[in-house]
Amino acid sequence: MQNLIYFPTFEPPTLNWLKFALLYVDNFNPIIPRSGMRELSDDYERVIGDTDLIIPYQPRYDQGDRASIKAIEFIDKVSSSPYRYTNLFNRANIIRTISNPNARDFKIFREKFSMHWEDYCLEHNYGAKTRGGILVTGELAFIFMTFLAEEIAFEEGKSIITDNNEFDNFLNYHQTIPRSISNRQNFAQGVLSLTVPRDISTIPIKKLIRFRNANRKKIRAFNTELNNSLNNVQDGITEQEFVDRFNNIYSELTSEILTQGLGVATIPLATYLVLNNLAASTPDYINQIIGGLGIILTARSAIGGKWREILNKHDCKRYLTNLERLK
Image (cartoon, rainbow, N blue to C red; front, side, top):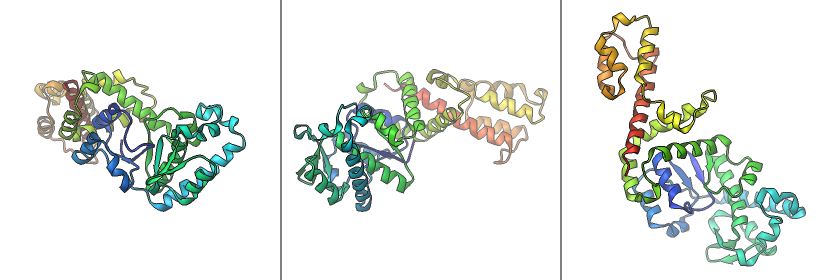
């Protein structure tokens, strides 16, 4: 998973989401203005500095201005008939909620919005000025940050991700996050939960950083196989079936060789056994064997394509094995 705009906060409210992300997300972009970099936790700063997982995105004024206009228009529409939107926010009257001065616990940094938004919030008693921004309720902040994330994602050609599922109905109403992104996130975390041998909350963040950096190529292979599995709707595999499907990947290459007109008799017995025994196979060794059969692995050959596919599956299988050893 890559090219993802993360919102509504700078960093996940729980460390477990970040730990899972270290194990499978290629990279994501939290919306963090320059002045907000001082607000980050030590663990988050460590992940930013020591891995390629987090690339902070600094919003531009025009993006914040467009988000401000759209947020104002939406709140005005809701205020005309607030009970119509009860199910979207799981609140009987969201306008009454965001008007509560005692519930303002979320700071929206000034670099994220235009003066139109600040004036609007102050005029309608939706927020209060604070140093470097405006203080609003979590509900209003989520609404505004949704519009800002959408502006950035549209302009940058990215997708949006969040770990906040409290307002899924609102996000679905806005079609903010494609269902495929949510399904992929849930599926990946399900696979990781099956393979990591201990509660991820007990694994130190420093150890997960080292593990990620040592397995970077295999994480890419893991993501490729996730995409292949989820894109093929006919498979309909479960997380456990995903984990189990890599046990006999080299037998696929044997089948491909046979379809190219090479009979079983033309394949040496030792070669056939190795092709069907993943435990005894290494990519370099198999490559030498295929070359010995006189088969040229080119980009245009069916066997070449199958071989590259199997190499990726091999790396994914190795990654799942490494995950099982993560303690």
